[in-house]
Length: 365
Image (cartoon, rainbow, N blue to C red; front, side):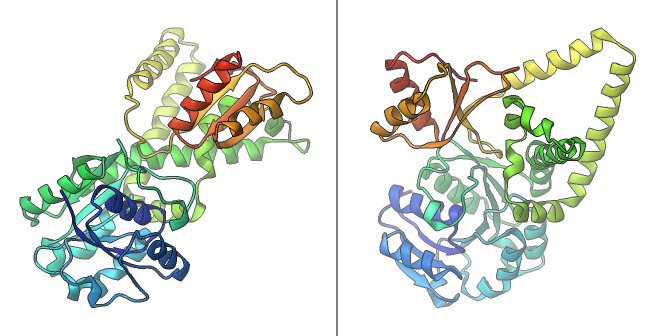
């Protein structure tokens, strides 16, 4: 695909990243955008990401190849009527929400059912806003397509070509199946992580020793609990049916494991952990997936003044940004006393290379 005419309703981190990818991989494209944040529109125009910045949805959105609804999940549904007059028979209307049921219900009884292909780029960041968007956000990430049943196969193929052009990996799913899958592999883990954090908080004493002694492993498995509460409130409300059913099944599986532990059934306990380890280790590390990956290295460090400063200087001298850095006081499940987290895999690889040159002992997981 050489070029497209694309419109964006919402130009935050996801919408902005798609727009940037269009500009990088299809530079001759024409891009129109609306966002209630005038600063984001001004920046996008200034950087040449969009050709036309709109303060309201108007005829600039007429006869485009793609229109991307990139507002919050529930807000996207409210834009359908507004955008409808500007959509031609060949326009592909899509969204970027992580729940598909609501948006499909909103279009199924409208003329736009022949134009709508739901979209879910399974990549993201804890950062928000156009200023944090990047053209390579979707590289090697799965990008789910959920076409309405009446959409022509030509439109599906056109969207598939677009996704491939921005270096993502297209997968076509039924919208209901999509919501079940992300309910299990994304929504459930977020709820479990947040529930575990709240459980520990409630169990902790006035001295907060649990928080103080929490191992690196606890921080790793609960990392996603730091995600946006507003976003996850919307996800839980819009995918409530699937999440409720999935939670019931998960609670039952936990109760079964509880009985196994009570009965001291060593064989089943071993099978539980072996099965989990083998399945987890079989998961390919080729896509960013629905849960943002962390890029972490652990470093052996002598307890002496300036040790962390030296490492920071080495990384800074090589233009490597650090997302987080800190001493691990509880090393029950960790190797290396210093935990260094980077923003992306490229920074992680460069960090390992330069620290290794200075003879630091490093561990990755």
